[in-house]
Length: 77
Image 1 (cartoon, rainbow, N blue to C red):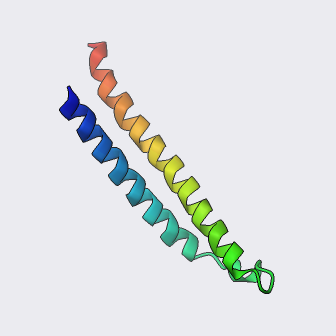
Image 2: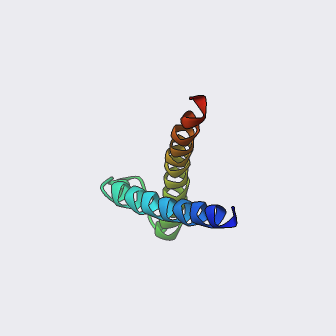
């Protein structure tokens, strides 16, 4: 029982990191430098980090939930 919980925790952590990395790479393709005011580079970078974590975590939660729902479908039969 506890081993399953530990395994699920590792899968969740890895999933979050993977989707955060994918999101970071995707956001790097945007031209946000045109939207940044002068002398506000640090704030813009912080905003990009927060956006990356928010979007990546949300997508990761979706896929983790989807995996759990598919596993639970086995209980129907």
